[in-house]
Length: 142
Image (cartoon, rainbow, N blue to C red; front, side, top):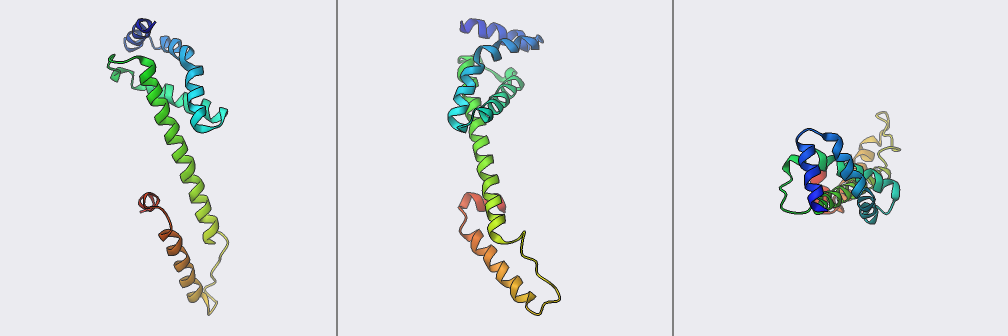
């Protein structure tokens, strides 16, 4: 069984790229299921698993034949799932910060005598929000 995977991988590396479809068909459902455990959503799991298969294909020449292909693909799929989750969380946090900071709604009029004070208060709000972020989030914003 695993010998067949190695033969297919060698074939793909040798230029018969269509043979990669055999590996995709063989492991697709298992990889989608694995990704769904992380994404908690079937549609997202399909998307992430597709990314994992593409990454594996693009890195196939780096496969060392020291382990089973599925073990290697499994690790790639987990990494893609974790990257997807982290990316989704970062986007959600950016949206929340933007909504809560008032940057989208608050307009400071240059003609207003209180504009300097409003600007100063806004800067303090932004700094307070920034200071409350985790260290990792602050690093990503710097």
